Amino acid sequence: MGNLASLASSFGVNIGGASSDAIYPQLYPDLFKSTNFLVGLLDIKVETKDKSINTDYYTYLKDHQKQNILFLPLYKLIDGIRSLSKKEEVEISGKDGKRFDPFQLSKKTDEIVAQMRQNIKCTYSRTTDVVTIKVTDQDPMVCALLADSIKEHLQVFITDYRTKKARVDYEHYKKLAVDAKAAYERARNIYASFSDASTSVALKSVELKMESMENEMQAKYNIYIAMNTRLEAAMAKVQERTPVFTELKNATVPTKPAGPKRMFFVAAMLFLATIGTTIHIFRSQLKKWF
Image 1 (spheres, rainbow, N blue to C red):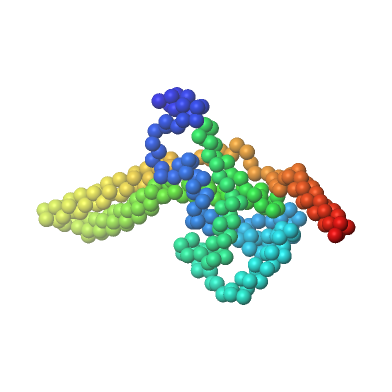
Image 2: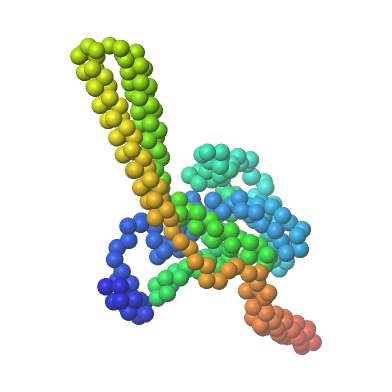
């Protein structure tokens, strides 16, 4: 079956058995679109290539983005209109002391999360089972730092998800083992004290009570050993469920910008210059004629 699945994957068909995980690699691109996952990336520390900016990703997107100079007057006009009706927004803190609450984001944070969906892309190849993370940003160093941090964040996210049930079982058996040990030690101390006090007593009732207490102590000991065995099995299960990630290509600082394409920019400027020159010449000729 494994050979058949491997052969089918070479043609882009996945016939592998159903996974026990609800989040498997095919769903990673959808995971990158979720607000809960993206909000967890806002606190990533980034630094620009010239080292002039060193802050978290949220502050970087909010306060340190360069505007297109061609549309700068339009941006200022829009900001001016917004400022007339702008109201103060208070960001609601998340649970466990987290900075943001994915359930209820402010309007500004929601806009930043929407921008992150455009900047961060995740793709999955069915033929090679390789997950690729791509980051687009105005600064090349921010791209590399963010891509590397997102990889680590994804690994932690998936590891926590896959081992959650095993970790809950481990904590449960750990508590049971501690309780069983305490119960065994209490039964042992009681038996030892009663045995010392009844050394010179030869009554049958005392012997029966000592035998009963010894059996109870042995039962507590057996429970303690059983809980320790289950605790070790649960610990092994956590290790078994922990996934192994292999990095085929590490994040690097790009040497060339991804866009805008210079040839298209030059062609567009040449086209606009041609149109402007034509209009100017045409208007000059009209003035001469009329």
